[in-house]
Image (cartoon, rainbow, N blue to C red; front, top):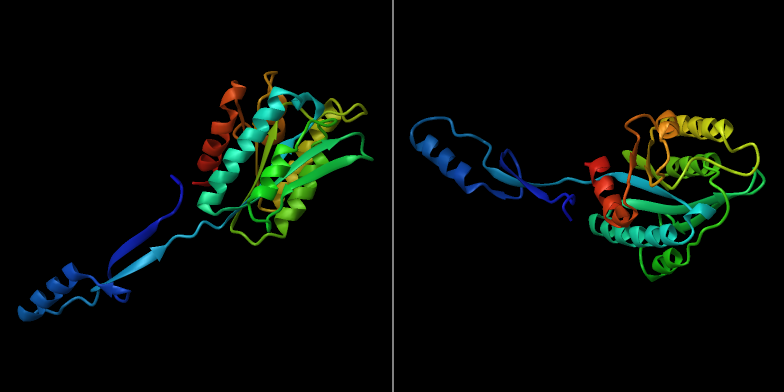
Length: 236
C-alpha cells in the first residue's frame, strides 16, 4: 500500500473535472480590475498507472529442503498479498533440473491467473526437487515476459546458491551459461535481479548479475519481509 499510486489533484488547468475555486476567484478579481483573467481555472484528477510486469523465479533445488522451503512459501504468500494490493501484473515459477534433458519449470501463478485460493494451494504444495540449473528457466521466462505488454519488466530470482547440476553444469560452465542467459534477458529490455541466501562467497553473482544486480539476505527468517521491500525499491 505504501507504493500504490494514488490520484493526484492537478490545479489551475485549462480543462478538467471541476472548477478550481481559488483560481476562479483570482480570475474574477483580475477581470474586475481590468486585467486579462487566466484560463487555468479547472481541477483535473491525474491517475498515475504502474505499467509493470514481474516474473518471480523460485529456486526449488534439493538444497532448499526444510526451513528454506518453508520460508520461501511464507515469502511468496506475503508477496502475493502485496502484489494483489498494488495491482501489478506478476507471475511465479519454480525451477529445478537434472541434466540438460530434464530442465523443469513449474507454473505456480501465470500472468493471466487471478490470485486466490488455487494459487495459495500451489504455493503450499511447493517442495525441494533436484539441482540448480538456472540458464534454461531464465531463457523460458524471458520468452514469457517478452509476450507481456508492459513498459517495465522485471525478472526476479530467489536462490540459495550458484548454478549447479551433477553433470558438467557445475562449476564455470553453469555460471557462464546463466550469465549468457541473463545477457539475453537484458537485450529484451527486461531487468534481471537476484535475491540470494547463499552464505558462501558471492563473486559468481557479481559476474552473472553485475555488482548492483543482486542482494544477499544473511538472516533467512527476514526473507518474507525483505522480498516485498526489495520489490518496492526496484519498482519505485
